[in-house]
Length: 311
Image 1: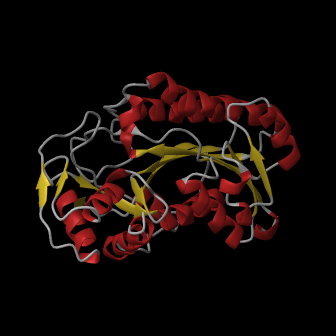
Image 2: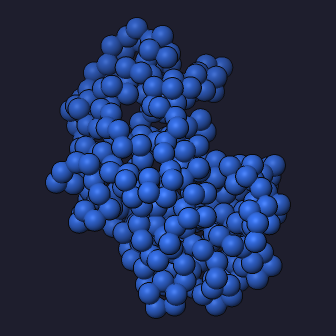
Image 3: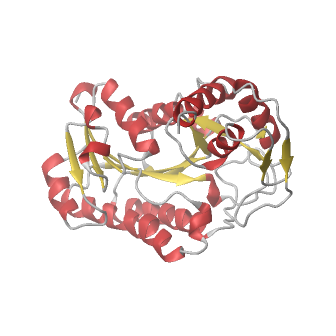
């Protein structure tokens, strides 16, 4: 089967990552089908051969899996908020853990040869004892979101071990890029564009491993084509640690902002202190990041300006 005849089903296709993934796969010759609960006018229809509007889990997925018979399914659906998982753990469990089980069980019944890529999170690590973080680091989540992502990974391992479904989990660290209207880059830019002086949470010394969504999409294609798919997990990041203070400087320089930043010293529940990924495992498949943070964050700041200055 040639690359140009391959089919992929993306759940959560109208979300931040779903849009990047659908665009990248179609640009590389794949036939892309998408599922989301957004109305068609809010879906990336230009990247899709077929769009299904429904709220997963839904029995209609049985019919869709039979109609599309995809070679790969990437699950980009589900709530992606550590903060919201605290007051509403039930919904987080439903939209992450239960949804993963329902999708896998559908393919087990209707199309067991389909490769399943589970979008997981570095939140499964919590506050690791040492950096860089390797995949064999003992998971220690500090939020309901992290626990639910870890349970989703266990479900992927179960369906491979018991039913021989090809599965893999991808632990994405801090993904960003134009289109993301939440999390730290958006928060900094939004505040900088509305005030001369801005207050940010934490101490500024907290750090993350930022990866552009375009590189996330690139990595997912490599995984779809090259990973063993035996229930294993991969870190997806750049292997570079950046403090929030350093990130703020990059963004404010790009925005030509000359005000001051105050860090309030308060760290919200579930927020880890420091992250830096070991990416040797995914690098062994042929992946290397292509967009440096200075370049990607500056472009993000310019996009935020275009989105916010006329509001």
